[in-house]
Image (cartoon, rainbow, N blue to C red):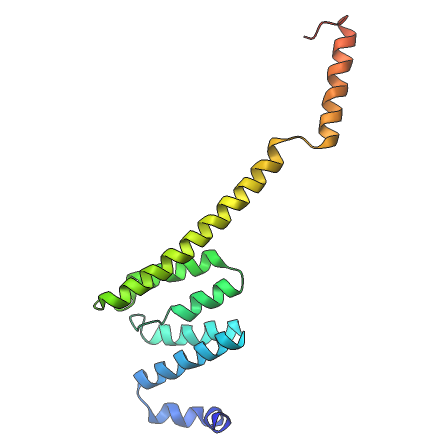
Length: 150
């Protein structure tokens, strides 16, 4: 079944209309995502996106694949575009897109907050070597000034 279809893709595309082709690319993107082949999912989704950026869920598997590849910031950008373009006439779908965007954005903000706090925690305190060096400098200065720190 699927192998016959894949071998005959050029014939399929000559005999079908763009909405059917877009649906095929969307299906391929979904399958590739669930198989863990994220670059192929992004490629198939991007082809469908080029056909019609207003199509429902056309950004979804791009964002999910970007997130799975560890690029959460890019996934947030993708869903931001989805919130702008996907089915502006369908309030229910817009609500789903905004909800997914919000979830990704909160996750990114949480990661950034954790990364910032880890960076702050490490940089607020001197290393053991820095502390020892500072203590030695202070001790030397106090000795040179007869016990008075300047």
